Length: 290
Image (tube, rainbow, N blue to C red; front, side, top):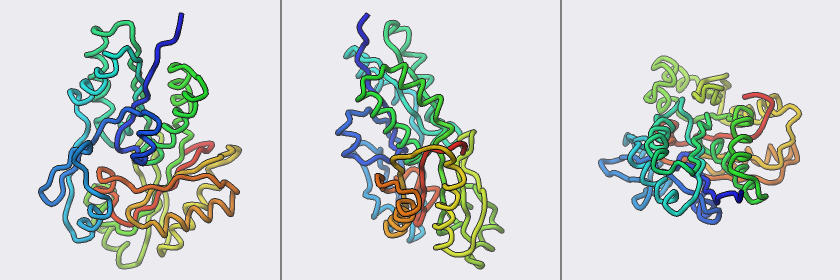
């Protein structure tokens, strides 16, 4: 029996460049953001990253909204009507309800499309960590792998997708409930920078602290050495909160230390950046454990 054509879906929190999404024919669900009393739906209404981070630096708060079931159902059905199967690699359920919304949508659609596959995967990942998982899925599809083979690989390997973050301003993490007010105040006074990661439950948690910005960037690469283990990465991803020089500094360290020449650097998008803030640098790669 011939395999049905399929499409890979992700969402805007994968932080993949627009040109990458288009070139690879990816379906995308959008999480929305409101800042300075202006609503951006993430589809045809988007705010430029530099403008977004300038507003955040000016102290203007942002609010975000997850994917809802109706939105997911409509997006999926456009492809199901054309006869496609689909697999959606979703933003971590530990950080958003978007995955659960997609599950509800898939359950509602299944009776109407009983012959087609609607596979929903909780990536337990964020930003370009999710994006890196998607990119592996894209390459597998190009190699002729079936939708079941792609989904199985993502499920088997998603907890090997390592995320290492640092931020320049603890107050954004405090407002997002990630650190206490005391920690934010003392960290600011003492120039303490946190190192965080996304754990096996898909939640963002602190794993250490260092003093000074440069030391925090160096620490990301030091921790990469510990987590990578026997994994042979041929690519790594870095996302940043409008601090490209710091992202490039980390990329150079990784290339020099591990001889990995291929990378992708892009902005942390508004719906994650609203919580992590300007100055975020995040490093993503495959390793033995998160």
